[in-house]
Length: 313
Image (cartoon, rainbow, N blue to C red; front, top):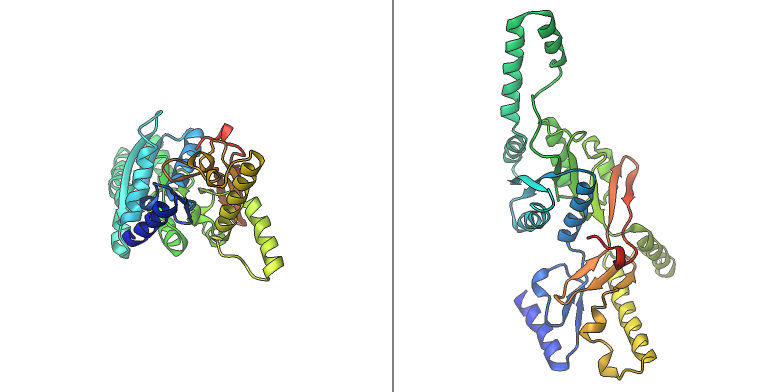
């Protein structure tokens, strides 16, 4: 990583050439190096903002016990504690099944709530009156008593991992019909719709419409499916062309085409994955959509902004 950073700086220092990378590594940006990749932190911010707009104020997170998990918690921390939002709890899980089960139980205070249910049943049985019997009847199908301390749970896992965790949440009474599951672009996976506990979950991702057009045209031309980063390469090339044409129209000399001011234009640019703009820090800011998982696939429920004039991320 440090060697790659040194090579980028070498290119930059020798010829004053800005570098556009397709990475989502925040450590390599700055000093003329710009990252065009998709940052999961931005996706966390977008989906949390949307959940808050739907009157959810108490958030929690269940993340892997590693560097990625720490990044996601930091992103969630940046978006809670302000404007009436609260970070209720954070749980880090390990891969071992039993350890994961214990983490899920602790997150939802399962043992405490199960004990409360048993205590309530015993009290009602001891009273042995008509009202108590009716109340006892209502408790028959419950496993726990009382609510968890959060309204939305960030679960930034993907693939088989989220399919392993989501059913455990439901089993230990973190009810997905009561607690909204929030995720990242890793959830753009049609297999998740087959898991009942994932139905209705929300995640943030780039808008799909323009990328789909790109994929269709690419497949028609090259008779193969493009790699995911192909849109980044396309957008980087298009950005260079747009700035060159703009410089030509304004009669700029060649050395003035790719200046920091030009690259970080506040109005941004429109790409195959929606609008984006480069920041002075070297990071990219993107307009993201919010999707809801359904049985027949993810459905866009809050479109991405189409300009940075109404940008809310």
